Image 1 (cartoon, one colour):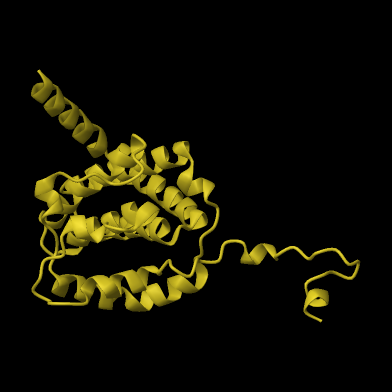
Image 2 (image 1 turned 90 degrees about the horizontal axis):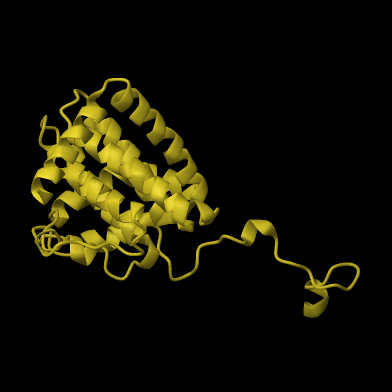
Length: 231
């Protein structure tokens, strides 16, 4: 009876349904479960960036981006973007040049948010994560693993990180939400969600960066600073 149930009417072996092709592997926890594991423990303990990305494999960029984005939601003008912006640029540059796993200088790897802050942010996002996990799944891997796709993701993150670091009024939460969209796509290995993030990120860069001229000015300043350092 079991063999018959696995065969089609013509006796040929039945192929798995396409909808099952991208189910999450049993050992891969979702974003909410990963956050639950991170916040478990002493609330006053610092969650080091180096520890956060350990053992996550190809999802480590997503978790690093997620944690790097948290300061953007600090409700103090000029503070959150100044912290998150350079960290996001660092993540984006590494994807842009094709690194397979994140690299962090020691002084950054040894730092990070407190578990208490991570716990508050996890609780704030919990309702949204519950809804998100109902619709996302590992799919369209070419949007995540192809060299050109990674480079484009990295480029957008660099541009968004620069915009986040600029004192553009009332934009920190907007850029923070966009960056979380990229982080969720990387964490959930969802290529379709990454496509949505590409569109939203490109629009944000065009509206707030190119049209306002602030992005071009910031890029010129960063390039001049780099040339001075090299010279």
